[in-house]
Every structure is written in C-alpha cells, then in structure tokens.
Length: 273
Ligand code: SF4
Image 1 (spheres, helix red, strand yellow):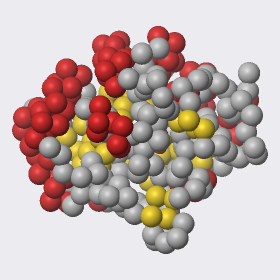
Image 2 (cartoon, protein in one colour):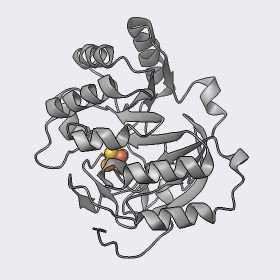
Image 3 (cartoon, helix red, strand yellow):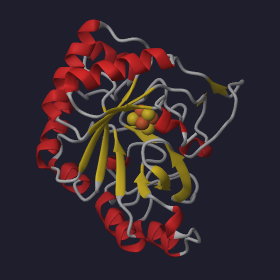
Image 4 (cartoon, protein in one colour):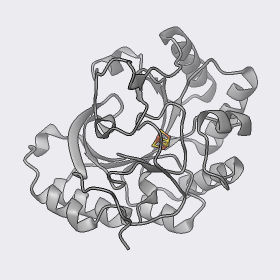
C-alpha cells in the first residue's frame, strides 16, 4: 500500500556535498510529509510532521525508478547514493527494491543513514542489509539523554534499540559506521557508557558531528540537501559544541577505542564545506 502524501515531490535530489561521503545523490523515500520515529532537537527537517514506527510505501518504487532513468547528472559526479531525505528511511517498506534499482542504475555504493530504531525487527534488518554502507545514529546511551535529545515516539525503548543495532551489526557484511551528534559537552559517565556500546559494536568508523547548520522551525524541502540560510525567524541555531570540545572528545575516543574516529572539524573534512 502507498501511504498518502499531500503532494508529489521529486524523490531523487542533489548531488549534495557530504563531509562524510563526498558527492552524494539523495533518494528520499518519505516524500512531502516528514516522517520519523524520533523527533531530534536538532533535526534539520524542523518539526517532524508524522511520528511513527509503522512502515509503509510512502513514495512508489516506480516513481524512483523513473526519476533515476531520467537523471541528467553524469555518474562521474556522484561518489555515493544516499537514502535519508525527509525522515527515517527504514520506515519505507520498499527500501530493499529501491536499493537494488539504484545500484543497478548508477553503479555506485549505496549508503543508508538510519536512526536504528527499527532494527529489532528482522524484516527491517533484512532490507537494510542490501546497502553497501550503513551509518547508524547513536546520540545517547542513557535513557534521560535519549529522551532529551532524540525524543522517541511512545513505545520505543533504548535498550531494545541498542540490542537491535547489535544484532544488525553481527549480521551485516558491509561498511558499518556510527554517527553521533554532540550538542553539549558529555558527562564522564556518558563517555564511559558510550565507549562500552561502541566497543561492543566494533564499527568500521565513528563519525562525530555537532549541529552547525540552522534548524528550520517548520518542514522545508531544501533542508534535505545543502542550504546556507542564516538563522532568522524561520531558522534557528541549535546548541552545538566548539571545535575544541569536539576535537578533544574525538581524540579521547580514538585513543581509548583504538578505531577511526572522524569529526567534522578535521582539516580533511573541511574541504567538503
Ligand atoms: S532521526 Fe534524523 S530525520 Fe529523524 S528526527 Fe532525528 S535527525 Fe530528524
């Protein structure tokens, strides 16, 4: 079944610059109504319009296929294809067929950016495993932190979510990355808890970020790509940490975890902005 959206908008957009993955062609499987299982304080989509854990086909697979066939972007200008867009991509029940179609059409690695909240569901793990690179958001490892930063839909439980991410990690053969948004300096206890979670997950890389871009107050389509709008009545700057704080945290995690930890203030990353 196709979930209703108020208007039909292009599902394929970009390419947009990503400090993590280079030039990224976006595919949005959520459509005109922002839809997610979380309601993060820093979300660039603004207020999430549809908070849910229920999967549906929000954008028809045929629409994505047609748009990819009509794409006038040269493949050489694209490093990766990324599924994120207007919400949580694993809510899209057509995630797996769209991944297959995009890979066949563009011959590029397929990245899925997910908040990981649905990974306790076997069907979701199966669909997501079709990707080449999966980046899972973990911003909080304590329930109070999770409620404050990520504001989950009622019924979600952090321990179950982390267990689902672990199960997926054990099964997934592709590149597995953890993305973490840091909005304020962490308590010592939270750093220790975070390190324990990351040690158990053994990702290929940890990517730290802080919300430098302004957040729209209402859902605006351009928020799924690059925008340089200054904070004003419609765009507000969320709390973020300084380069020094993020760098110190990244250095500490890299030393303690003995795995690659990148953050958006690194010199290599700045070339993407
Ligand atoms: S998980 Fe992503 S799309 Fe969902 S509310 Fe958080 S930042 Fe926005």
